[in-house]
Amino acid sequence: MTNAAGQVAHGFWGAVGNTPLIRLKRASDATGCEILGKAEFMNPGGSVKDRAALGILQDAVDRGLLVPGQPGLVVEGTAGNTGIGLALAANAHGWKSVIVVPETQSREKLDYLRMIGADLRLVAPKPFADPGNYVHVSRRLAEELGGVWANQFDNQANATAHERTTGPEIWAQTGGRIDAFTCACGTGGTLAGTARALKAQNKDIRIVLADPEGSGLAAWVKTGTVKASAGNSITEGIGQAARAPGNLQGAPIDDALTIPDAEALEHVYSLLIDEGISVGGSAGLNVAAAVRVAKDLGPGHTIVTVLCDGGARYQSKLFNPDFLREKGLPTPPWL
Ligand code: PMP
Image (tube, rainbow, N blue to C red):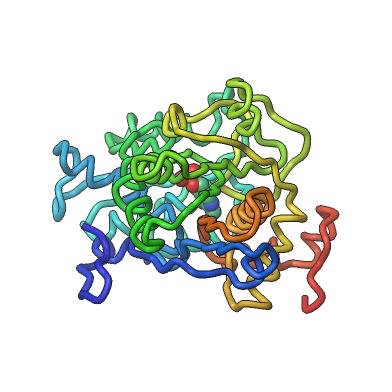
């Protein structure tokens, strides 16, 4: 059950979804298009991943693996946001959560996970091929502890949640007037599920993957092979260097764009200071891709994208002059 506009929501589970679709003024005015951002930072756990968390846990309930009100354990490896959604959703039903996160993720997300009672296990960042990679560590921990492994990368309940909610919401909110959708991928659940729902309504809607530098997914869309590109993005939760996750496989994607951090951050800062909308790096990347697609299509088109989470989750990085200088990125004038 997800959030229904204008009605009382039942707890965390009932408050996820039905987020506003916000017209992004500067991006729209600059391109002569309507560029609209799905405000996923307004979910109760603060990110788009609340939808995946709920879809995965509801599936586990449906399969009898978890029972609301009875002891249960959820285990997951995550860049942070899925862990936050899972831990809060678990709290709401009296379950415990063990969340494995690479220690390089923002301090704010790690502190938040501790704050909400998740059993946080930090691991060193390792490539997917290494058994110490956070995904594999979480799978082994789930087996050892007898918990439910959420497995967001390959568990289709993730993409299905977006196919059932995000996509239909966008279709309804635009009244079907949508020409393109841009979206970055971590697991691919948001892109694949939303794209499937939109293409089912109109197969001509252009679906564009927005990829950070260093990720191999843009190459995968174009050639069928994941090929890590040059560069190292500071965006969190998106891009893959080693594989296309199960949730992304088979998604109806028309094109892919690789977006440099500096271009994504321009939108993060402008949305914040010119429009009062606070978002994280992946949202900036998504908006940058939407602007590029708008310029390509020409004036008069509608492009929808995803504002995955809020800027406060990255205060110590994207809004920290020392961190930005260290990464060779420009510092916004007010900081
Ligand atoms: N943006 C942020 C901030 C995220 O945390 C994630 C998920 N890790 C994504 C985008 C990507 O979403 P998905 O897993 O659905 O591809």
